[in-house]
Each structure stands twice: as C-alpha cells, then as structure tokens.
Image (cartoon, rainbow, N blue to C red; front, side):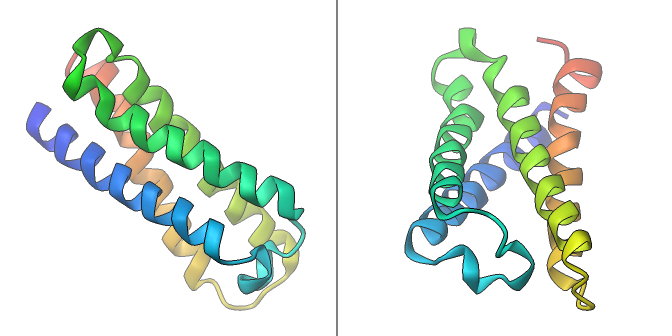
Length: 121
C-alpha cells in the first residue's frame, strides 16, 4: 500500500506542478466557469499549488516531514472542490472539467486516508 501511495503522491505532485505552471501562463478567463476568480487569487493559487507539489514529495527526501503529504493532498482536494463549486454556480452545461476536478479531488482524498488509516506513520 505504501508504494501505491507514493506513486499517487508523485503523480499528484507532477499534476499539481504542471497545473501551477499552466496557471502562470494562462488566465483564469480560459476556463469559462472560473472567470469569477480574481487574477491575483488565480496567481496565488498557482503558488499554493507549487508548495503543495513540494509537500507531496518532500517526505520522501526528509521523512520527519511526513505530515506534509496528507496536508498538501487535502489542500489540492479543497481547491478541486472549490473549482467544482464555481463550475456548478456558473451554470455551465458542460461538466467535463468538473468531472476531472472531482476525480482529482477523490485521488487527493485517498492520500490522507491511506496515510492516516491504512499506513500509519
């Protein structure tokens, strides 16, 4: 189980880092349902995502910081749920992006569950 959790954490870290870089190079206006997010918040989210990506893999390098991985995964899950809520509120009829965000949130939610319930520190 520990190997599966590390694979998920590495994939989530890559996904999150790529998403952060994408946010730096693309405006929130490129996703119709996220137009309500102010530009400064959008850029702030990219910084949070970069910190979360580091938090997901840092425990592999320095094990005493193992608590960072579940916290980072929970933060990413919260961001994905926020995006989903904004999508629902926007009234957009296309739900492909929201399904993607919910799948990412579910994977992120599994990481803290796996670390706390299945594989204790």
